[in-house]
Structures are given as structure tokens and as C-alpha cells.
Length: 228
Image (cartoon, rainbow, N blue to C red):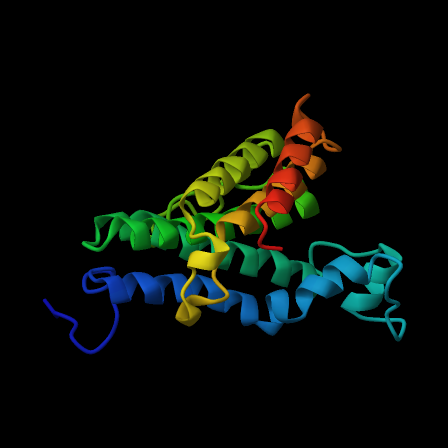
């Protein structure tokens, strides 16, 4: 049996605090992809809207502009695939970091960041597609479920809010984030996204009677934090 010593594997990673930090950086790194937040994010959100108009008459962007797109549209595939790529990496961190020996404050901040990012991925997916597969465990072998069934919009929103409440409780406050970690999720960033989630769910099929009141409370919490 080969014992890996010069490459990362499931056996030799997520052992140290440095591994936990690197794992979280790996979740964030997906956002840099041109086919995700580097470009696709505004193509799928703005081209079908009134802000932009696609040039030309053929291709994936004119399809988005004219609302004639299908599942074969490359940008829609990018949005779907990279959302789940990011979620899968977040699931890795959420599963593996609790077993690492490190300070509770640092550990909880990393877990809060990962759960915020997972929530953001699912918020993007549920707004784009409605019912979607709700995958909350990492892919660990080729025998894992390859095409999981969809979960209801209501179930997806419940998990999003659960993750964001955890992030709100465990991420560092804005003034506690060290300079070397600027760009990580703050406690109040989770509160701000919660406000948006509540307000968006209020206009969906999964609406709850308290959504608008909860959105207002979260907005007021951001304002009263004094950081922004």
C-alpha cells in the first residue's frame, strides 16, 4: 500500500490548523474562476435582465438575452457546476475541521465561513433553479450518489438560514478579523445575507409569515453594529 508523502490525499490532509486554513482558502478560490463569480455570475444575472444586451445573434449569451436558453447553455452549466464545486469543498471543511486540534475561536470562525459560503451557493441555486439537490456531505468515493434527487425549495431555504445563523454566531466580528485574514466572512456579513434571504424567501413559494419581520430585524442589526 502506498503511503502518500508528496501529494495531498484524504489520509494526510485536514490534520493541522494550517490544513484548515488552506481548506477554507480552497473554498474561496472557486469564486475566482471566470466560469463562476469571475464572469458567469453577472452573465447569468444581468444579461437576461435590462442592464446588459448580448451582442450577436447566436450563442449562449443571446439565448440568455432572449430567454430561449436550454439546459445545454454553457453559462447555465457553469453556474450549476461551479456552485456545486464550491459547495462540495465547503462540505469538506465542515466535515473535517471539527476533528483538528486548534483553538475553538479559530476553528469556529473557519466553520462559520464555510457554512456562509455553502449558504451563498445554495441561495444562488435556489433562486436560479427552485428545487435543487441539497448535498450536505462531501464526495468521498466514486460510489457516492451521482445524481441525487431534488429537495424542495422550502428545505433548501431552511438549510441556508441554518447555515447563516451558525455563521452569524461563530464568524469573527469585523473589528476582530486580523489583517492577514481580511476578506473572510464577518459576523455581520452573515446577518446581511440573512436579511436578503428572508426578504427573497418572502416572495417565493416557501414564504414564511415572519420573513419580512426577520429581514427587518437583520437589517437593523447590521445598521446598529456600527461597523458599516
